[in-house]
Image 1 (cartoon, rainbow, N blue to C red):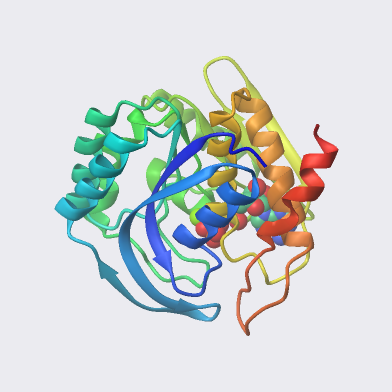
Image 2: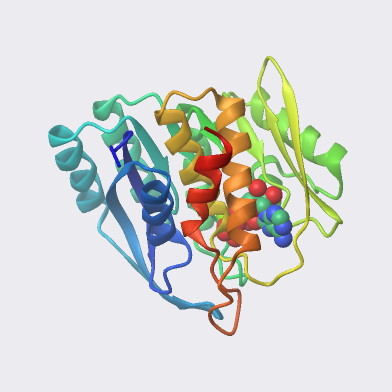
Length: 270
Ligand SMILES: Nc1ncnc2c1ncn2[C@@H]1O[C@H](COP(=O)(O)OP(=O)(O)OP(=O)(O)O)[C@@H](O)[C@H]1O
Ligand SMILES: [Mg+2]
């Protein structure tokens, strides 16, 4: 198989392999591209929860990005967990030098089990320094609530929050609906030109660890292969959906999804 594109992933490590850098590498690889990494933190976790978070020094994160990219230029960048203002500043500084336009930012704040992964002051820095630089941001409902200081109970509230983000200077928002307690999950893609709602039947399972990481990595991979934004989101949502359906039921808590389902999607979407 010929490698389709090159992706740099800036995110934290998940020792259980279901989310974070591990989910990102698996997704990019399964969808046919080459994954490079800048690790921001090492988490000690399993499917039942996060035990600890060991941060990597901001300067070292910046160096991972610059040294890697000066040798192999990425066609897309995915940004995940950035836990402190210093880390966000380092990443923003490095990205100024790297100059890649296809940047997907997943503003990770809370792990599936409820553990907070980012400090309060980091949220402010994220808003001021990084969110507007990204081509697309992919908050889930709790993250969109924090970023917009609104309460999201239904689809109307989701559209309202996405609009607030857009007005604050964000280019494209995909507000993910996985956290809503409903029969369907609705993800909303919003930009100045249009709104698109992706609706899927909600799969009844506890095994959704890493769905958010997987989704943003899939989107940036499709984007880097030249697919338009709406199509990239549609394909990535289908990939995640099939990954949840075929989850291996590993672990006693929120288990991982099956990243290897891409073969099915490749056949379907050729
Ligand atoms: N039970 C489910 N059935 C179908 N789709 C789901 C389900 N849970 C999540 N999704 C989809 O998975 C994608 C990720 O959404 P979600 O809201 O779970 O992100 P997240 O909270 O950031 O995930 P994570 O906890 O991994 O950070 C979205 O496309 C969402 O619609
Ligand atoms: Mg998430």
